[in-house]
Figure (spheres, rainbow, N blue to C red):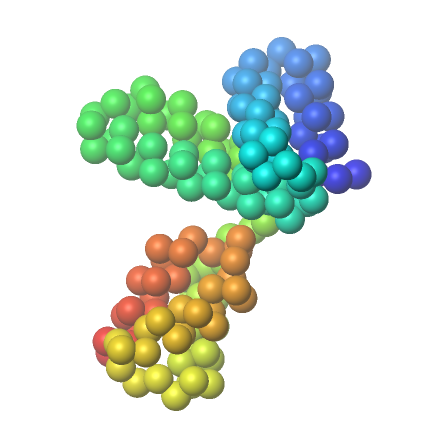
Length: 148
């Protein structure tokens, strides 16, 4: 069963269980996937759906940070609940330690020893961690490793 079919099935299950919050979040995800398909005029495969879900998760994380800065705890809680549902469909994210290990290997492979080579390192590292790690965290780890 593909990811899209799984989402559709989970919407039905949430409706049967009376879980309105989960149902609404899943419907929103399906709408975002459909919008991406319409915009690109293609039918998304599982990788494309993963990408759309990652984009939605990133939006939620940014909204949570904004709401917390503004003192809107009730809105932040709602976004956190939506993020939890979205993350259930995404692959497990890499830990900071795993990113550090990969980044050190790429830095050693390229022979980069200064912050000037950050673009090279990021260019080689990002395809390896795409969809499995937050780009901001990867950038931060690489920057710290090159500065030390």
